[in-house]
Image 1 (cartoon, rainbow over the protein chains, first blue to last red):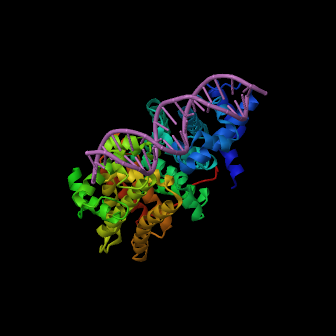
Image 2 (tube, rainbow over the protein chains, first blue to last red):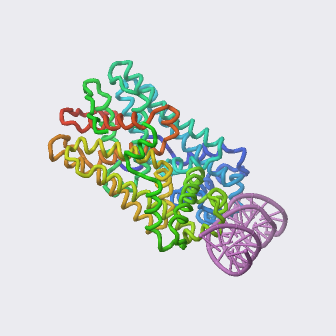
Image 3 (cartoon, each protein chain N blue to C red):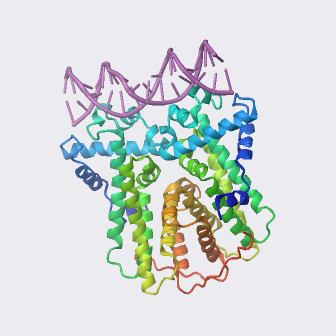
Length: 238
Length: 238
DNA sequence: GTCTATATCTGGATAGAC
DNA sequence: GTCTATCCAGATATAGAC
């Protein structure tokens, strides 16, 4: 599956996304014409993601950004009021898109096993299509100012909650084992994150996203399946 | 188990560690007396880890570091030649300790299941005792200069290799299933990392490191156990 | 060995021309 | 709407007294 097919699958269109982006931040953006603003927001955001993901947001100077985006430093400040503000905007947007697409794609699925697999596949494909966003969001969260960081963490937990709820539904329906659902959801999240945090490694090993998705869904499914019995591991050596 | 017991378990003594640290970087450190150098290296390193983990290494200024460590900016430059150099030193040291302790603790264990469990427990306890180091190492790797980064990645892969080899041994001995060992090792690594990357979350949920270790060892053990059969998940909806 | 003082430069941000 | 030019706070790094 190529990248365009993935985009269709998670229904993310660049233009639409940035249009939303623009309208959500209309107040702070001084440019009024939509087509101008969207065009430049794309340039600014892509340059920011590129530079930040290479050497960190705080190591990126406004002059770097100016050069990479093609806008002067003066012009940049028509799109955001401070460097921190730019960080906030991008961070927020990526989490919003993630939660929106994820919710939409699992909405209405009844079968918990299917629903869980769908959530896993969607998250992986989305993080593939929007890789720079996801990577940025993870790496820069701790550099947000207090209030913005609290908000980011809250959204993160809401994404985790989606998985917790699916597992709970499966347990109630009797198709998933009675294991600690928060732990399992945490595990799934960690493994979803590994895909976009270690992209270089998986690329090197020539593992495509579909293979990773299949592996992850398999691990989770086999762990949650009711027929599997658990034994205690011998930990007497501890 | 309290933190001191963990320290004994992974055999990390602060003084010893920093003594090694000092001797390994003797060339670039201008201070000759060991007890002076070690005392100040502790102050410098702990302050660096604290400030960097809060807001990022590149956002930490030398003035911040001076204030937090109690040394003047002038004195700091007797311990490293540049800010980047300081980053290198700390990064290298944490990876070295990790690989040294891990290797020592699994060396000589024959039973693959025990060996794997031991590696998992050791890594988790070590990342608990040295949490700021591990967190720093992960977050700042991409901010290293090219050569240092290549080296860091190489050591990372050597740690992963330890797990790959254990799994291979288990497969040869017939106690582990014939699954993709690189994928499983990657999964283990991702879950080990989750512990120190999301410490705040696990703390909030009051999950102690022992509980996490048991959970993780259980997941891995049940996935690798030979008696478990795998079924194909229905992916027709994709 | 450590400090204070400072040289030198680069950072974010803005004013005002176009 | 965008650019050029510039302000000045704050950065890294060093020199030289103690």
